[in-house]
Image 1 (cartoon, rainbow, N blue to C red):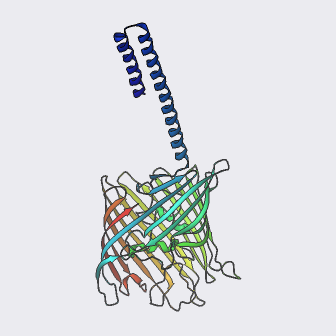
Image 2: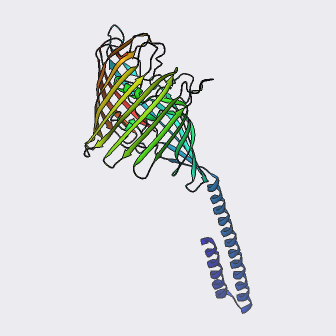
Image 3: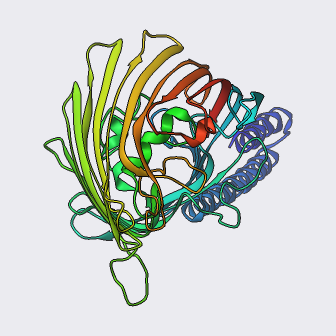
Length: 444
C-alpha cells in the first residue's frame, strides 16, 4: 500500500508540474489523463497484493490444522522436561529417568570383602517410556484410550534390565473416563505397590497422596526388600493383567486387579488377585490392600494397612504394617511373616530435603533358597527343603540436593542386620551389611 500511495503522489505531482509548464488547456488535460491512468494502475496492483496476502494466510491456517504440535509437557508434577506430541485428539509423551550411583558395600561375598564401584541405580530403575491418550468423543464424559510402554536399563553398563525383553516394566493399553475410572490390560505394576496402596507408606520417597497413577518403591538395596510383600505370582508386577482404579470425589481411591495364570487345564495356577482402598484427607492419607496368589498350586496372601500424615510444612511421617502367609511344600507347614515400617521426610525449604527410615521383617518358618537365604515373599515354595525363623531389620537415610525439578544429587546409606536363622542374600551369609552411595538423577 505504501508503494501505491507513492505512485498516486507522483501522479498528483505530475499534474502540478504539467499545469505549471503547459502553454494551453489541451496540455493540462493531457497531463490529468495520464495521472488518472497511473492511479488506476496503482489501485489494480493494490487489489492483487491484497488477494495474494489473503491466500497466504488461508494456506497457513490450513497447514496448522493438519500439523502436529510439539511441546515440553510434565510427566508428573516434579518433572518439567518430558516431551509431548499432540495431533488432533491424540497425545503421546516421551519420558524417562537416569539414575547413576557410585557406592561402597561390605560383605559382597562370603569372604566379607568390600567393593567401591558404580552399581544398579540406588533409588529408581533407569527407564524410558512412551505414554499417551486418545479422546474418542464417546460417552457423556468422553472416554479416552490410554497406553504405556516402559523399558528399564542399567545406566552403568547400558544393558537391558531383563535381557531380551524390551518393555519389561509396562506394556498395557486401556480406557479411562471420569465415571469409569481407569481400566488397563497387560503387564504393569502390582496394584499393592502402587500409589493406590502401599506406595503412600512403604518408604519416604513415594507420593503422599493416593492416586490412580503407577509408581511405588523399588527393590535394589538392603532397605527396599519390603516391596516384595506387595507382590504377586509375577513378582512386583503382573503379566496378563486387568487393573481397575478410580479416584472418587469424596477422597476415596479404589482399585482391583487380576492376573491370569495362563496354565493349560488349570485356570487358577499362576493367577493373582488384589483389592485396594485409600482415603485422602488434606493433611493425611490412609491406605491398604489385600492380595491372594496361586503359585505352583500353593496359596500366598498379604494384608497390609498404613498411611502418612503431614504434621507441618517440615515433617511428614509414614507408617505401615504387612501380614504375609504362604503355603509351603507338604510337611513343612505355612510360612507366616509380619513386617512394619516407619519413616519420615523433612522438607525445610530450599533445594535440600532429608529422608530417614526403619523397617523390621519378621519371618516365621520361612523356606530357604538353594543358596541358604530366606526367600522373598511370593517366591515358589513348592521345592523348599529347609525352614528357619528370624528377623531382618534395616535403617536407612538420604539427603537430596535439587538443582531444579528435573535434576538432583543425593547421598544415601543403609545398614542391614539379621538374627535367628534369618540370612539375607544381600549380606552373602554375614549377619550384617552396610552401603554408602552418592548419585545423580535426571528426569525427562
